[in-house]
Length: 507
Image (cartoon, rainbow, N blue to C red; front, side, top):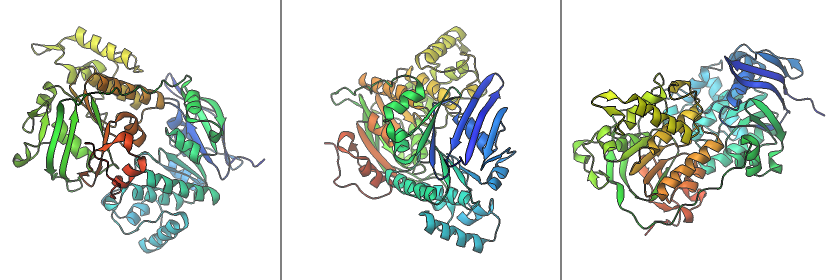
């Protein structure tokens, strides 16, 4: 038997009374792609921080290449041959590719540019070293992150949700690159919630639950349902069917909207047209940075169109171009922003006070004073209905995990009985069990006649939820595609700027 490249024995890590990792045993073989699976709070992120030197374990031993290893920092981890590509890229957009890499890798620009080109050719990671990062696609930025890691000559590469922002075509290219890296001697730790991808690319999968290792399996020997059951400890509920509905009234209509933001790095919108009717879910697909944030701000009322464009947005049949966010909410509009902390919730405030921020019309404020009993009852019911793991309604929003805060914000907006619900990235960073629950509730609202607009970078999610899908690319929307008649490859072509053929436009 070949000895493992990395071996963890009895690794434990606590934060106060919370035990994030408990007696973790893990072996990563040389030249392997090894998945780490688990729900939110299972201990995946903490374990990666321990392996990469961001944190140090309270107990246990780490053996690297047969020798004990103790890491004080990520810089030391890189020197020892461990690299990591985080889910959210850490590149400076105003610098070139080679200038970003110079921040980590010593050498002159000419020398480094040559190495970037050579690595790109060797591993299928071609990128122009002199290009400005802000001009690169998301897939190209990911290549830069991986090249930067490879230039430190890693033996182990940690990838955190590497496919979360990529179209299907780019995922296939990434997987080809990962197999090439594995065959050239690099081991890979692969963290993802996408179980079919893990079955496609990974040789082994270790499942964490509640900070413990549940087991290590060959994911190719198990279907996605088996892996999900191991992760959450129970069977996944069936997908709720979307009931056949008669054509409903228009709850959101945008007609030929153009918008040029003041921010020079923001994406202008051109000719945006869409319609969402009662009893219908419209999904907006697209690679991050193609105008999703700008579109969300205009629909929510956080940004305003110029005067000549203010007759382009209608809610519940009313022109809302001159209405602010609060006035749009009073008309029956509810909104879940992509940014949980800062826009969806105030981290320093309790869940009760965060409830009051958007639910105050529900008799939670009387004559300018907060109805404390009513707000607490509303918050407690939200926590109960949506399985929010919190110490109680007085817990600070910032004390919740990202997944639990997302469940709270989505639940709060659903409880407002909206006529029109707009949700941006509904299950971002949420584990498979919680994501399934959120999607089931969205479909239930749709079946009750609510009009729902969903922006998501998860194609699988959009295919599960949506009646129609439109794709946002470089600030322009595709025609609406009937979801049941559309393939992921069709969406992928729109995502990279090509047109699907034939176009599937609903009558």
